[in-house]
Length: 220
Image 1: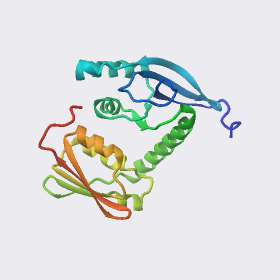
Image 2: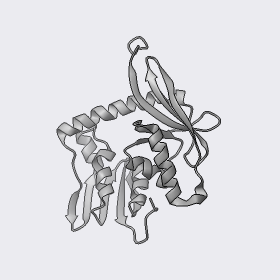
Image 3: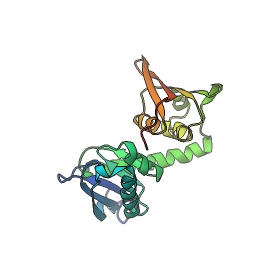
């Protein structure tokens, strides 16, 4: 396996690490390290100390995140132990693929690279097949069964079907049938000003309802 990869250069992957060398969160002081696979191993390309002052407010946070994104310089894969709220939103808005993983880079870099490649190939296949969209059942009320979509086309992910639709927010209510609640939907829904309610329908089936929240969003 190593000989086949000799000389092969992979995409860059960045991660926020704590003092213990394990993935940390952007809300905690740490070091952002950018890795790249070179042959059989992952090499450190660049790194920077990163610490947010949570007391300075959202404006300063966005300035800090802009500086981080500039440092990442084209690297579009970011790993943290957890990512949420405005920090997650700033990365996603900039087009990052955000991974939430606990552990040391040696334990997860190869896994992420392989899964990113699978996602890229799946996206190419979806581009040929076309991505289904939620159906409007009544004005402002939409429905889609991710279970049915993936039953017909397993390569299609819930993000490919729903993320842009949720980001555009041109609906009053969205009902989704799926086998589990995709974690990314909870954060995206909150950041776009939608409430989320889920209920279990069976062993491998649940209903998720997104509705326009009466209160404000998470401030993302």
